[in-house]
Amino acid sequence: MKLYILFILIFIFNSIEAQTDTSIVWLGEIDSTIVTDVRYATTNNFTGKVLYPTAKVYLRKIVAEKLSGANRYLMENYNLRIKIFDGYRPLSVQKEMWKIMPDDRYVANPAKGSRHNRGAAVDVTLIDSLGNELDMGTEYDNFTVKAHPSYKNLPEKVLLNRKLLRDVMIKSGFLPINSEWWHFDFKGWKKFSILDEPVK
Ligand SMILES: [Zn+2]
Image (cartoon, rainbow, N blue to C red; front, side, top):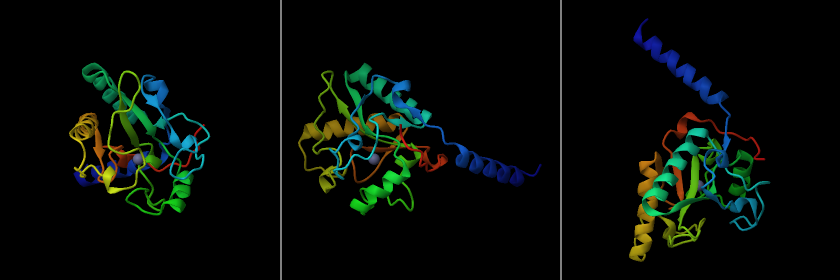
């Protein structure tokens, strides 16, 4: 078979696979030692509304496994753990967020979809053995330049905490973004399609 035909067939197969794969897993099933704090299941979030009917975090299986790897590494080497604020987010929720915060530096335009809508992004921080969050300089969902990873006018300890989180996440297969210290995309996010399955 000509090589280019083979490439076309692989491309078609991959696209079909991406469109039909709607599987997400409950993170607790993969790693019950990761602490969850799902603000969107409460009114304690930037919208002031309960957006999820559950505080359970769902992700693509491989993404959950990679996050579990990061958590294990932190426990073994630093006696720290991951705390997760958000994972998979249905597209309908993305639309609600966009109505309140139509700024694509902080909320992905639902016309394009967020990597959270693909179950391939996580919002995380670090906690110590007592469950206290490490100081990252701002709260989660702080939509100012102070939350940008490039913002350096912060105490040395904060910069080191951010660097540790970033380094461990990159090492575990995630990519950081420019506007939020807590957000990481799974490196292979493109192969997962946008979903609007409700969380249960
Ligand atoms: Zn995020």
